[in-house]
Image (spheres, rainbow, N blue to C red):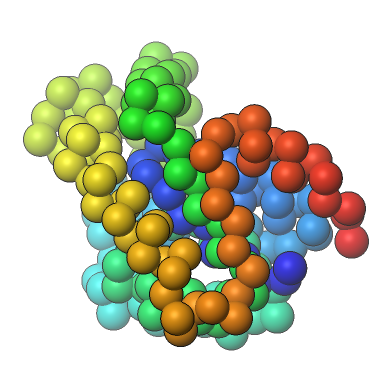
Length: 174
């Protein structure tokens, strides 16, 4: 496992797992949100995002976390795909906890951006985004696991954080 792509719903823990896995494997962690979001919540262009992912996936080792549809064509460069397929209620609880921690503790995310209560209650809400995309992410995860063009990849489908943690713990550091 040297080229790993982690997918899952918003708030499922992709970035956290990516960092843990990269540390354990002495690998580079890449969060697609970090590539997509500039300061002040400005997005890079689709072309810039795709070019950045293309560059990352040319390296010999990486752990990518994220679901941007424009970058999915580079999944074929992975040797391992991990799908965090957690229940909606669990992901919602995790996302609420993370969002309110970021708001009230002032934690930074995505290139120095801050989540705010105003943003959380707006149409741009990350929580609303979960409601809009959860089923779609589930369908995409299912399709990814059976995609014939990815059949050569090692696939891991985790249904609970405990299952993910047990697998992570079972890995030997390289």
